[in-house]
Length: 385
Ligand SMILES: *[C@@H]1O[C@H](CO)[C@@H](O)[C@H](O)[C@H]1NC(C)=O
Image 1: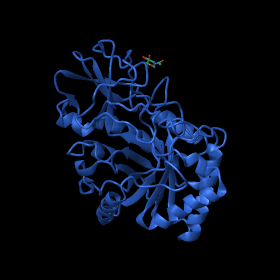
Image 2: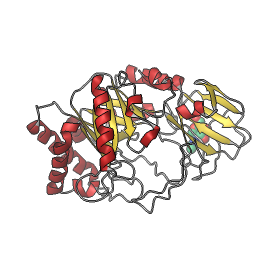
Image 3: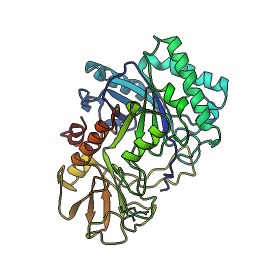
């Protein structure tokens, strides 16, 4: 499966009602069905839940793929969250749901229509999400590399001003989720209009690469990382106090070509053909984009690594898996010498290292993809908060 992981810009806008210090933002994917109920979320630990995604596959306004299930699921989520004063936001766009975003943002009357859609729904808490403007997502996004970032800045400004007119000034937050590589230019317009940038500091290495490597490195000498994302975004004009560090509650598996038992995390691997991940992993075909080849993801949710017998405890592997620790990226990885399957993932130790970096760098907090993927004991969430 091809993931274009160049240093693209991945943005999402989120409107919330209240600004909190030390935010803990958790994504709640709306396609989980019975597998994960909103009531399972530990709302005492989260300040914001992003309900993802309403998609933009055509036209100027987002849509829900299943309106009636959204109505009931979102109502349940909002009511449970409010009991703990957590905010619920609606996230728009995503990897395959950002096809017409660029076109909308390029035209004043289209932006107006989009902003009106947002204001109409904001009573239920609302989010917009524009992924990879000026770059490609699943393969079908309309992309205008020269103008997308500027158009996005204009959209944000107009949104800020409309929200301040429609509601108490400053009472709605606008946050965006940004790519690990920074915005790809000056983001002063973006930085001024938003309350926070949630940095997507994961999906940095995977089956799309020729070599194995960390999904979510804290640091890297030759690639993007948690630390480099902070550098890129601050360099582009967004202060650290507006940045939120992304945490992955999942790992990515690939098949190595070498025996990795010598303990080096970087080895040649079978490219673009990950093995099946956990029991939830299934062959996927993007319904909105034939260019997206789909296939298995190779993803292992942390909770499933424990429940499906890869880990004995959050910090120890179960035979035949062997756990290794990579010092530079501050991440653990598993290797099965018999199948040559490699899994890069995060555990309580690597999550704690990133949270500590977020604190010492003065970030606004952390963001988690996704709330359903933790162990039943919330080992990762507890390490993150
Ligand atoms: C990145 O650095 C690691 C060592 O830190 C090395 O093993 C790996 O081969 C490098 N990858 C590339 C693509 O240069």
